[in-house]
Amino acid sequence: MQGDLRRLLVLGVGNVLLRDEGIGVHAVRELRQRGYPPEVEIVDGGTAGLDLLHFIEDASHLIVIDAVNGGAAPGTLFRFTPEELDGCVPVSGYSLHGVGLLEVLHLARAMGVLPPTVIFGIQPADLSWGTELSAPVAARLPRLLELIHEEIESWLTTAKLRLEAMEG
Image (cartoon, rainbow, N blue to C red; front, side):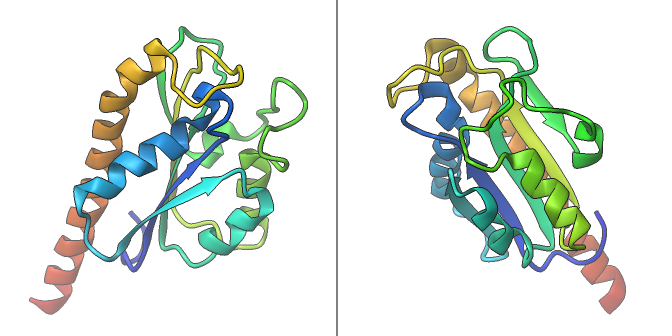
């Protein structure tokens, strides 16, 4: 973790009308029920595209949750940093979010506003019209939430230890 933890943004993105494409939004809805401290802001980014920059630029740390086409079995979980995604191109050539998440992260980095970032994703099984997650993705949602919770707790603990070291 770099710097102090002023605002940890947990950003779920995706289109909930295209089944598994909406995993990020489904995840943040669940995470909101966990009662995190005020420095953890959980946001439904939906299909906001470039508007996500307004959320990102004020964050000291960022966790993004999205569907990821990694060519793996449906329900496979991924954890990336933006640097690990450099050079990746959307498979379809366009994004269901208008401007893709990768483009938003690259733009935030170019503007100098991208905080330390982790991206959690899950391989979708079904991108057809519908609001329910497919069985393989729904079955992995609890594990995805657990991994995100562990990341949040790790950043919170590190920030607390740094604060104690500065005060003590």
